[in-house]
Length: 108
Image (tube, rainbow, N blue to C red; front, side, top):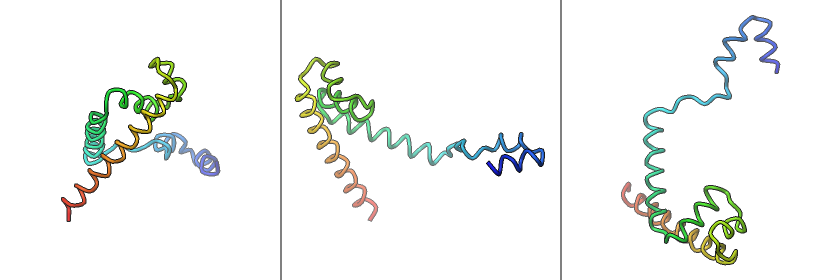
């Protein structure tokens, strides 16, 4: 607030609005490449899950849908949703751990 008042008194409001600290800077080529690689790996890991596990995992973890809502969407028992989610999370974590181990070995 004090910065805003100081800017107003010096007549530089327009300049400060254009250089807002709240606005993220444009990602560079390296950041874009890292993000693209992470997305590629995510899709590879998701492809390793069964169709049922993948559907529940995506709805719960990525879309933030609740267990009962997933059960209604997929027309399955809520306990089935939680069992599939538990199995999917376990497989997902195991796949991430394998990839980390491979990368650690590769860069040593």
